[in-house]
Picture 1 (spheres, one colour):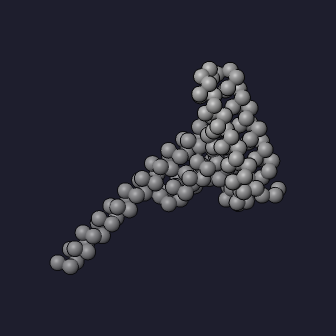
Picture 2: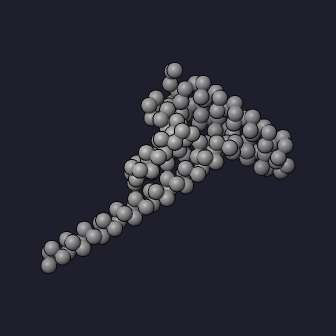
Picture 3: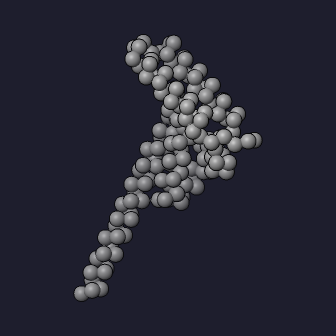
Length: 140
């Protein structure tokens, strides 16, 4: 009787762990797509979403984590942050300049609604604050 109760508990626990792994994989994949979008959409951060992807994958699938780290385009964001605990000043300046170029191009040529323009500017300002003062800077 006690053995059956323990076996049932163990099966439930294993099922819960597998569901949690699946949830982490799904969340990691969502964060991965947001991070990739952040490369192309001004104001949407790339590195934080890719770091969240790495956290979700490392807790759920070693294979997915290794693929992420080994990717020649995306892996460098995570490796740099992990090895240096931040971004170099050069990376920050480049990212902020590129972000504001994309914001300016969007606002000047593609956005007509004033409310949307202000939202894009506000998100760009938040991105600049996060990139400039919240994400740690390391010396090259």
